[in-house]
Image 1 (spheres, rainbow, N blue to C red):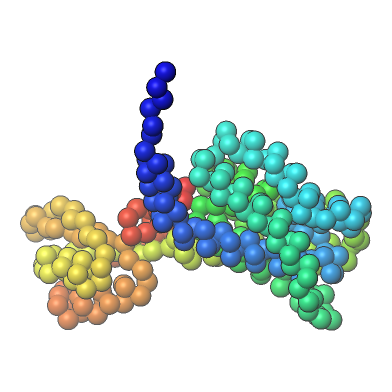
Image 2 (image 1 turned 180 degrees about the vertical axis):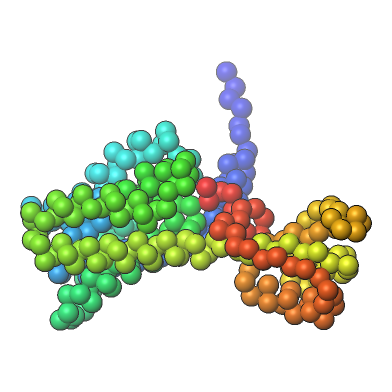
Length: 298
């Protein structure tokens, strides 16, 4: 029986194309998890603070049994991956698996990093919350996760629109309650501070990157305005056909999604080119499609 030889390029080309398309995701996931690992090593373990989610359970196991958090993270996330493969997209699971392995490695590597000397534990708690929020927000932004409770958090956000920070706050209260019996009341209070800061930072990072301005324009020079938005600002425009309620005249309305700074340019243009134009501006909390958030990030 003669085996049919499959061209090597049939597999290589799609892989290379995928790497090219996902290089930004690779950078974001790597940086985000590095920031999270630093937060644990620099501002959680040295001060015996409770941590968040599965990482929090890993930290508690370190306090009680002396086990490295890296091994607990690997074991717990392996179980969650089995569930995630059925519930979420393969892309999300693959990037999450990379996050878990990377974080476990970095936790071991960063043990060699010199620890900062912060006499104020409150500052350490705030720093841990900020770093966790920044790291988590960067990872969430590209449609990946750091594993652990991020997996059910993303699933709930997609199904019911629950904010990631809010979900984390509610679930992690249980972890903090468990921590009370291990690290004591004072450390738990500092942990609550870090958790609160984390929730604020991660939600604001998610909203600030996704938020755009929706503009609806009524102008006597719709083609001129459309050319300005398309060529000078570099955004797309959709024409909507309407009718003047008083005059009964047919009109072309323009709909576009812009960044806040681009709205300023458009206002200046309209004030010069068509001072009688009307423009309604509203916040669009999330815009998906070409030129904005990629559908692959879902």
